[in-house]
Image: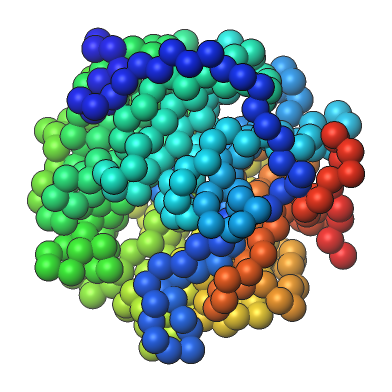
Length: 454
């Protein structure tokens, strides 16, 4: 176990932590990628405070404090930089405090947005990402358990697209990406967040991969795609699954067959489905586990990376391991590759998805209006339960599922104009979608009840 060796440039920081400044309200960042020179303006864009889907968790329900803690990418007053914000929803009082400003990331790139973990002692850990190697990444730890008042900077290093998964009694298994000839998947472990193993390559297929991570009962899973030569990420395709039950000492496919790392070929034992052969792109949305502990993957397929009807249908699917094979089913469509939403699998076996499957005020733009879907038969059929938003000005997107989600704070997301730079608010809803509530943009007290959106 080597001290703080996520990468060679990692350094221990011994600054004396001061109380964090507080913002006057909850304002999300706006971000755009890939000008298209057509009516859609960008490959994707909008209010991306909870972006991207390849980084999680950003919210965690903590039972001892009866709070849902969360982090997000906030906007500085001049709208030129992304602030890494930390806050919580107090379930006992139904209020939120003024959010704490952890750091100014000194970029407007929402890829740098933070992730969150909570250890066994209740300390909050914030993992601040970097998009590529030009900027540093950070790991901060709250000075006091279950407090957002002050944080110590533990590590300054470089990582991207992180999933800091904390396994009770064992520590961190940290899935992340390192840019080196593309996007290479890595993992590192730590018993305490201070002493880290050397990063181990997990996969680097052709021009790289994107992954999502999840943990349940000591099992950690990685679901990923690959970026084929010569185009790379805009041709992302295929669906892969790996898992470990021993904190990364060994990795297997879903059948329990041990694999040799790193995976470097498109055809390998982790392959769930060969979408490259079908000529389809793959955009992974979420991974969860059914009541038997089997993995279920939520994802979207399309014909191309540019926005617009020509690359539809933008078709949502689930892939469920039934103990013998992957069962792939389609359930709905939306109008953009970057329409994102999570998959909930509840103790009674019900499946629930909250996603922007209605077009919204900027059709064929990132996000849209949110719809709640449920399935009582493991994705064979779906019921459109209700539409949660009907915004006349901004699309809603990047819905995130809190870890251990409490029924009163079941999903967190942001809004924004998908064509032009705009203001952005943050929202949450309960399990049944009874109320959509907006976090206060301008606070008039130190703790305030979020407004209900009619």
